[in-house]
Length: 428
Ligand code: PRX
Image (cartoon, rainbow, N blue to C red; front, side, top):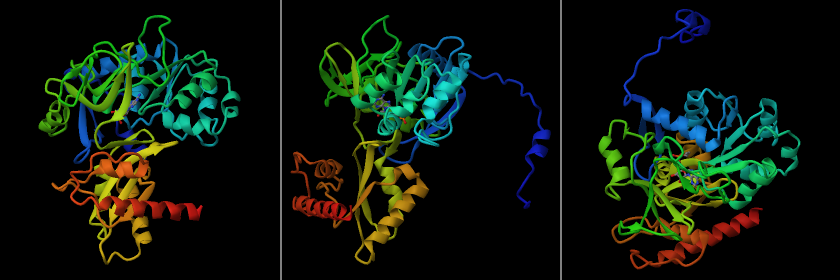
């Protein structure tokens, strides 16, 4: 044993087995959780005692139809907001039995979730679409092997759930008899804000839609000029027009940043960063982020964070990262990098960049693809046009390119991208 090692039993022996509860003010800090925005360093969002606990508990009970004696199975990591609100605080406030899951959905095999449901008689199962998309590729037999008759509610969180994944959850996992709830919320909101429940008995639930605002949540859609969009079959920036108990109170150490990030774009309203569509029937469907935030396997990341992690490499003066649709991850990162003239072997640099992102952020943040370009497309005012890069990858109309500093860059990047594709096809 080294000098720095201390026997755990010895240290534990010094502590009391019982800890007296401490009275707290309702607005005292309960916890702080870091999350990504479109600019700058991650924000430490502060949640407080009473409002957060109330909101986590009420949403847990009503969205999932949690009844006394039920076993609640949220398979999210406790370190994220979903784990905070729906593994720990919400279920425990309601006296529920809460399952702690610490693994991956495919270890030791693709039946792991359903074996856990059978063994623990789980009544509500709550997970991420990215896991559903992965599991459905393994086939139905892994699900059918296990008894899932205890299940009543199946919840989805963190990213849009596509129809195929929703239908699979409903038909295969839930045997067409469970209620599927697609729940929309954020680290900032503390708990679920839009979800199919509560609803009147027998009310319709549509695939891939969060649908109804929770009690106290008043969503509005804004157009580009900041006017409220009324009626049905319309889209806009999703804002919430009234405070609710679970909302974050500040960004730790920087209240002005909190005000600027959430309340400046549409004065008097909380701006979520998401776009949404409201159907004729008045239901909400989230259409995705409107800023430079991407969602890889349910992990929220600012593209700037990935760029920052690559910026320390001495051979890479500039980079631009965008998100693009990915079958299983939902979105994946694509990085465009510029190399210095004396950078040496590009393949080596690419490998080093991947390692840098994995160690500075996490493995899931590593770009799926890294393309070396001579320069990045910029406006005359020097802003990188990520929108154009996205169009180059996804195809389709490039849109307005008149603000580009040098329009010839489009053919330059397109040809680099096509070469990259050709190289990839040849290596398969
Ligand atoms: O873009 C939305 C997406 O995830 C973002 C919030 O990420 P985070 O703070 O990490 O919290 C994730 C767990 C609550 C949102 O701005 N998002 C979350 N739920 C959904 C969703 N997008 C579509 N449908 C959802 N149900």
